[in-house]
Length: 476
Image 1 (cartoon, rainbow, N blue to C red):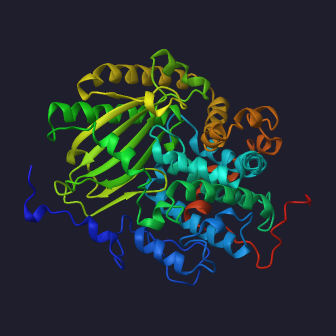
Image 2: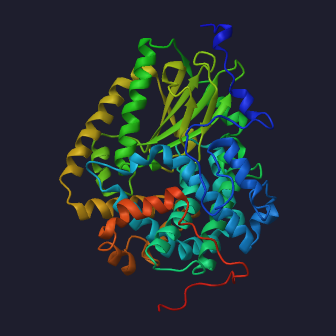
Image 3: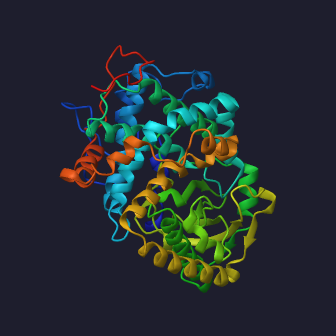
């Protein structure tokens, strides 16, 4: 299919120096920049907030800077401000995702945020001690030659944006901590995030938004081996319908298995192919063995992950901008790219540690049997979930966030078992257990926390001159 002149894509203009990108939303961000020009979303927003930084931590950072043990206070504040804007940038357009008719998502999220901020630092420090700073960077680099891996943008981003940013924000809103508490622990979390992401990208940046929303991490020869297995088809043809139907069904299950959140999905790209088409690689994790409720997925014989290679014709949809954002999700203008998918491939990785040589291709013509398994598992998981009481739903969802966000890194570092045995990873900290009774009071989970998080008002800076060694030494 040949595009006419009026249907030519213009998305490449977004990658030119000085181009401000498109606006995907009408709202603007203020955060800690009161009295200054509000910051928009997208490429322009990234440029504006980086221009206000006091350090160089948001620019291309050299390896020696990543290997340093700690950030300075200015660097911590710059990361705090950037992550606060970045969270707003990716979440405000989808704020209604926090509301589920079946799963109390807002309640489990805020408990997980705070649990992560309290518990992760010692576990991440232990993991770094076990493998070294370079070892953490190597864990990030492992994603460059893999598909079906949870060492991906959303998990890596969550370490800092959720564990540090939202966790600290929630505890500040609850008045359980002050702005200068747990600085040393904040450093542990953010250093781990920086090292994983820097090792994965290897271009000096850590976040997709710093690179005009590109997550092009795969080595070229590995990428070529994927592209060689793509099947081409016409839009709305039977193969196109089979492929997109499977994508939708597997995506639904990946969400449900991860308690209605995006930890089950991971996009990379966009990769420009020699013929001008664009490739998105999408991991859909439909069977996470760490979750006891995934037994219904086991019963259907589902793999850990299906990976879909989506080939999009940018001219066919007159593509103006494409973003693979930091929660591993592809967004475009115009919005609907499904009709412009002109090729695809599906791969299965049976277990999280299945060698790449054993990852296998599923022909599009054979997707029907897999679709039935996915649909059956989804129905059974809905039935199982609907029978759970509210408290079980909240704590299960809390585990999805608190455990799964660092699970892939601990697995590759070989420290997951130690975290479970010596650090009681799956136990609930008594403080967080007590917060269970506080989060529904005065609209804390439903109103206060979302307002603090989405507005940026809750991400208070550290004081100038604060001691980077400071923890929390007293409860007064």
